[in-house]
Length: 185
Image (cartoon, rainbow, N blue to C red; front, top):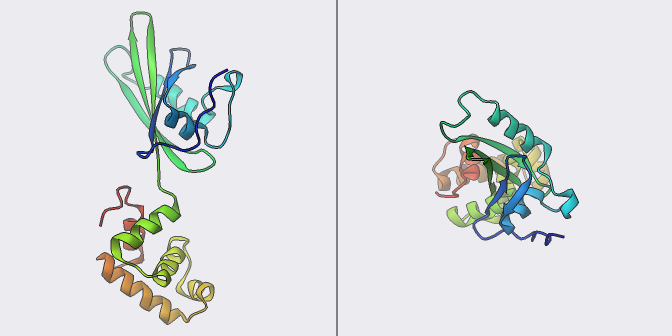
């Protein structure tokens, strides 16, 4: 029986899973398996790639230009039960008897991680973070005000302060900064 994957991804949150030409898992690193399967513990007999990723692999294999001329790749986003991840599928054409499919998997930030990073990057207060969270959830200023037990005008004031600190002029600008995968200001 294979060793169970660790549920704690490596600090860089990236991993690799290798498939043979029959699309069976033949190699992996611990982080790749943890990201691919999330909280689901697997045994040898159950070790198979999730259906949405298999569909993307078949799409790559059936794409025009796939063959012996070079690598073909595609990206697919999926949720592993804990995180939203991106899987880059690289179909390596056969050289000799066998080809290889490489799954390069990376984990996106959770909302809590993104809010924490934004708070650090822009020196936001707890109340400013609460207002941002409401914006990210798509709430109106009135709805955010109800959640925070303050007036809608105070919510708008918090958002203006946040926009000034972040160097943006709209709510969409706040969300765009929050979604920045590198978390840079």
